[in-house]
Length: 459
Image (cartoon, rainbow, N blue to C red):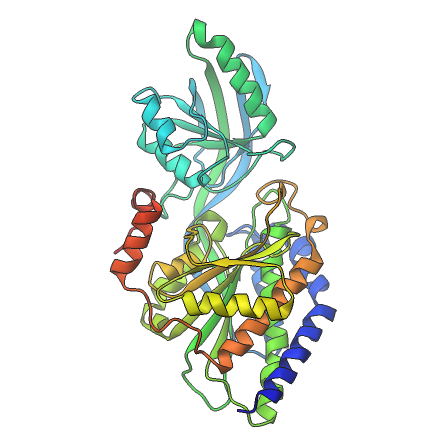
């Protein structure tokens, strides 16, 4: 086709998103009306209904909700007493209730070398680890494997509040209790441990109240289908809309949710405009907003399993997870034959005058794109930031933390990229990765043991 209509549609798309009057109202509904949208809660159901209604209002087709089962969790009070001192803590989602007295062992950053150095010493003790280095779930899996009876996880930075974050373990209840503490509390504990070393173990009394129950999560799906095409191949733009129960989940991930809603709205206008000029895209765009990401990417995993027979029609999954932080726009691309796609994004970023970092050498197994990469589907995670951001996973993740300019820029870039790829899929990978290729990448990245411990190594 003559490129002029597409270029005109692009310019209109970018202007629409950068000046949109629907972005902020959508954020208000998700954060102020639906609170943290914790999976299995009334807040989550209210958010799912709002998202479906938004898709319908914007004119997308097949807007619907898909339910999935999960182990629900409801927070109760938590307390931690060490040497007679009461310390502030919060239960980590999924933790079983407990009333536990046991010695504490400090395991540094909780990396493999820290556990190897400790030998058999962690067995029967409560593991205390810093939040630096590898992901919380990796540290937790090592503590479980080492025979620990409890898990204390700290913030990585000062002034960052006690962190939350799930103890998801392969869809099963967490085997040992865990709590989050602030960085300052960790420093106090380190000093206390140093003073008591000569006198023997330091004992902690950990109490956690929590309710475990059967629950239902809700994914929200809608389509932008090329005119006259019944079964197109798809680009999938997605994000998780669920957050944690202690804050609004504004940056993580109302920002990504609204990016998907805004892109869906603007891309529908672009598709209709081009269709009126007789232009037809090669691909459709499916918009998906997942729930249950914060407790183990449950919504996207359920979708990938339920729709396994359709995955070969997905050409790329574009996942937006935290696009409301100030800073550079990052794209982590995974899959087979992605060099042309990475080059395409870099070229588009230069044309877009956008500060972007992109590459295909990093596997990030802690967001919803990973549910599809495990199946070999080309997938990427988009995020903004780069500096310190103490808000996500704490009480501080509130609406005032969202950088709307960063959100608009990230949304505009993503929508423009998807519009171009829908008309010209040439930069996309030639095929999906094989199971053997995915396994090899995960082994090289050091994730095999973790995924096996969590029951996610399903090859």
